[in-house]
Image (cartoon, rainbow, N blue to C red; front, side):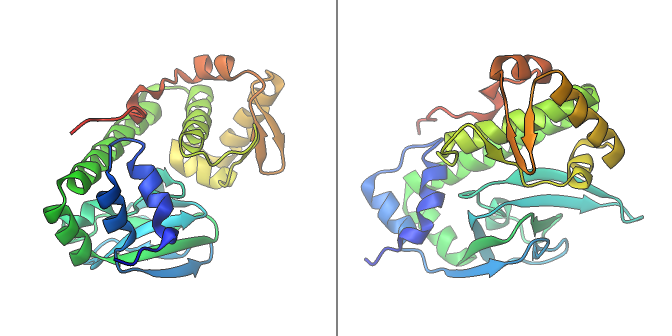
Length: 244
């Protein structure tokens, strides 16, 4: 069985939540796949599509979004390297949302049938994929709470905390500075706020000493204080191992 280490980020992400044995890992790495590089804002999935491929983000960032009939956008999740961008389409036939690249990104696409077959034949892989889908659902619930019940200051702090915690869990942050990829307009579309409100709130967090910005780089002088403002707990990320 020939394996390709390009899919290693996917393995690392799955093993954040569920155990995989050596044969599971080898089978996942041996999945047939094509790797492409996309510019920022490229569509990877469009609402109404019938996806026959399973996409894995290898580098860069992406987001899911939905549009109202008037063209207003709501960003509903943010994705980092290793994330599976359309896990639900292993079992659902029609896409009900859009997936776009947030930055330039390298994406591996795997035939849907190959992943389905692997999940049926290797219980460890099936369990890991199922847990990954449940964790996605948990994150969606937290985003609903964030937008619906927290004020602007806490919403923004929470988004920053989640981004940092998820990168840390995947070992993607060599230092204490984070390259935050979203524009103020995109942050607003994720938090249900205007770009002007986001700008004002970012400056307020800086004045309070909760964040330090240098271009796209952001750091957190007091992680504990930022978490308190955000009402942030990693519980909903389910970073511990979920046994089969």
